[in-house]
Each structure stands twice: as C-alpha cells, then as structure tokens.
Image (cartoon, rainbow, N blue to C red; front, side, top):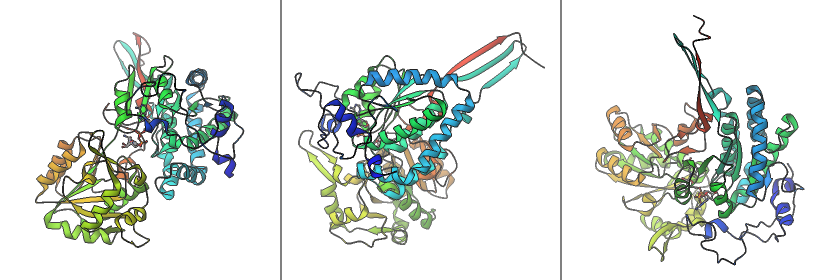
Amino acid sequence: MNQALVQDVVAEVMKRLGNKPSGHNGSAHTKRPGVRAGEEAGANEPQRRQTYAHPHSADVPTGQYGIFSKVDDAVAAATEAQKKLVRLSLDDRDAIVKLIKSLAKQNAQSWGKMELDETKIGRLDHKIEKLQILELVPGVEFLRTNANSGSNGVCLEEFAPFGVIGIITPVTHSVPTLSANAVNMIASGNSIVANPHPSGTQCAAVAVREYNKAIAAKFGIEHLITCIVPPTLETADQIFNHRGIPLLVVTGGPAVARAALGAKKRAIVAGPGNPPVVVDETACLKNAAASIVKGAAYDNNLLCIGEKQVFCVDSVFDKLMAELEHNGGFILNERQIEAVTRRAFALDPKDNKYHVHKDLVGKDASVLAEAAGVRIPPATQLLVGETDKDHLFVQHEQMMPFVPFVRVKNVDEAIDLAIESEHGYKHTAIIHSRNLDTITRFGRRASTTLFVVNGASPSGLGLGGQGYLSYSIATPTGEGITTPLTFTRYRRVMLTGSLRMI
Ligand code: NAD
C-alpha cells in the first residue's frame, strides 16, 4: 500500500467538514475523565474536533466504506448493513470473517507501521505480529446450537445477534482491537459503530475502509464496520446514548471503563489491569526470567495483560536477577531507577496524586535508559531493578519497558503484595512456581480473569499457549476473554411434542 493510501482517510473527511487539518488538538485527553459532552467546553464554544495534518489524502469521502463524521449516519448505515448480513448464510459470514483475517495478515507490515507512525508507542515487530495472529480470534465455529430432545419434543438454544454494537477502542492496539472485535461481532451477526482513540484514528479508518471495500466487492455490504472520523468524547457520548445501539463494548482505561459502567444500556467492559508476577523458591528461574522479559517487553509493555511488577522471594531473588541479564534484561541501580521514575511520573497539583507521564508510555527501553542516564546494549528488551513495594512503578499501570522487582521474605508475602498491587481490577496475574498448593492458593485469591502459570503473559491469549485470542478481555463485567458468543442473545426454540426421532 503506498504512503498516500496508508496515510489518510481522515484529511479528506476533515476537508469536507470544513476544518483545517492543523495537527492534534487532543480532544479526549484534555478533558477530565468521565466528563460528559459539553460539561467542560463553554456552552457557546464550537464543538472541538480532532484534526490531523496529512498532506496526502485518499479520496474516500465520508459516507463511503464505513467512514462517517456523524454518529446518526454511521448507525443508520450499520443498521442497514446488519440486516443484509443476517440474510446471508453462516457460510457467507464465515467467509467475511476469513476475509478480515486475511486482509489483516496481508497488510500486517504496512498497517503495523502505519499504527506505530501514528500512535508513536510500542514496537514495530509486535504491531505487525498482533495483526498476523488475528487468525487465532474465534469466528462462526463458536456458534454451536445447543439441542435437547425428550418426551416433550425438541428444544434448541441458538445465539442471535444484538444488531449494531458501539465499540470504543484503545490507542495501545487500535487496529488489532477493532479487527478482533469485528471478527467476533460479525461472526455472531452484528455490525459495528467504532469510536477509536483520537490518537489511533487514521490507522483504524484505513483498516475499516479496506475491510468494507473487500466485503462490499464480494458480498455487496458496504458499511458492516463503521468508524467515526474524527472521534471525540461527544461522539462517544452519542454512541453511549443512541437508541439504535443496543450494546456497548468498551476497551480502555479507568475513565472510559467508569463511563461505560455508568451507561444506561448494557456495556461489556474490557478495563485496565496491573498484572503482578509471583516467583517462589521452587520456580524454574531460567524460564521465569525469559517469560517475564518476553511478556513485559511485548510492544514495550503496552499489553493490558503484560507483566508490570514482580514479587520474588529473597532466597532466589539474586539468581533471578542474574537470569534476567542473560535474557535481554538490563538491571538499573537505585539512582538510575530514581531518575527514570522522576521522568515517568508527574505530580498533579489538582489531586495531589502521581500520574503516568504519557511521554514515556510505550517507548523503547533505550528511551527509558536515556531518562535513567545510562547506556544499554542494543539487544536490551527490558529494564528491571529492585524497588520497594510502594514504588510508583509497582502501584501504577505504567505501560513502559521497566519492571520493578520487589524482594519478599516468603511466598505468602509475595501473594499478599501481588494482590494488593492488582488493585482489584481482576484482570491478570502470573506465577512461576512448581508448588501446586502455592499456585492454587494464589489463583484462588487473586481471582483474576486471566491466570498464567509458568509462562509469559501473551501465552494467556494463545501466543505460545493453548486457547484463542481476543484483544478485549472483559474484566469488571465478567464476560472474560471475548468470543463471538459474548456478543449474542440466547434464544430458545421449543418444538413441543414433535420432531423427536428416537
Ligand atoms: P484510554 O482509557 O485512554 O482510552 C480508551 C478509549 O476510551 C479511547 O478510545 C478513548 O478515546 C476513550 N475514552 C477515554 N475516556 C473516555 C470517556 N470518559 N468517555 C468515553 N470515551 C473515553 O486507554 P488507552 O490508553 O487507549 O489504552 C490503555 C488502557 O486500556 C489501559 O488501562 C489498558 O489496561 C486498557 N486495556 C484493556 C484491555 C482489556 O482487554 N481489558 C485491552 C487493551 C487496553
């Protein structure tokens, strides 16, 4: 795909809206979390729009191939598309899902680069891989009718679509989340209205356009996946409150999770995490070190399931640190940790609390090392270092390739502190141990949606582990790692007194 094509659907939409493309004006993130449209802007202030400076614009006007500037228009188009979708056979739905997966794989290199160029966070190799592995996302094969026959007839339980689903996607995996949601949701007969993260919109819009183009060419449905360009808090709010959208699926951090939980309709919420790792004296330290580096360094620790802090028993602590050095880890000393912490967190005078400094989120280990005032070997994947249990890097979901290691006297202390640092998100926890009692105890007490034993966190989503993939892990609302079934309504058909063949 050439640069002009990759660069933008958005500039054309902006042009037609009469806005000058003038760079990022940061609508969503300059506002207070959870604030509804209009509460912060003065009543007479014109609606603030996300704008993007892109000299090359692909000629795709709003209203074509799923790109819309108005939520009402997107919902109307997605509603029509969904009616057409459910008229197709399940084999056709399966073919659409496969088309999306193959387009993601085919374009993984250019879309991965496009996403990295736009969001400026993460690693290119992993941005590409996250699209290549989309084939691990389940599709139509998950819709297996439950059937039950007996003296009174035949009972079928089927999985019906909701209709149009409103989705909110994160900047950390803009195209992967949109694509995986699309696979799951279209497999179960739904269409989509997406409000992507403002800083990951162009890449999402290009993927939406390409998916719709291919689906339209083969199946005559043009707007199965719609995308709001530009997305704002106002358009998110309109999606939350639209009568044509019966279901919301929100993937993001604490503010949007809170907003979705307060919505007046059903919301499936894939919220934040702060995954702790416990390492006890029975663990294979070589495997623990390799797994921690692999998981925490993945996309520069942008994964919500990624290892964020480690609690290791004193008796093997130094040995684990030595193993980390053999596996792409670089150990920072106290002074270097202090220096990187000063750059990574900022005290907000408004609430007198420390917040993660966005500038360092998802940046390479070399950038963090520079902040720490140290030069590191080019092969370094992850920075590590010893901290106390209350350190900012331990308690915050920092999404950076520096992982703090806390020395504890025994595994009971490790489990207590790990659970405390997870803050009740019930997202992901990891343990390295050969003691089944310890594994069971931690698993039961942590009660997280994902519990990974003796592996790297991505194995919990099918990367080097058993199981299927999703980029939306519904945590506070309890649906877990989402599948096509997550986006269905259970319907029962009862054929009384007939069709029993035995
Ligand atoms: P974010 O919360 O800043 O943004 C997520 C999305 O919500 C964006 O589209 C954003 O524009 C929108 N948004 C933010 N505040 C909103 C509000 N008040 N109302 C409506 N929309 C709002 O998060 P991010 O930085 O894009 O992504 C990282 C966060 O997402 C981390 O906390 C991570 O753990 C979480 N995450 C969770 C999962 C999961 O499956 N559970 C997957 C990926 C990311």
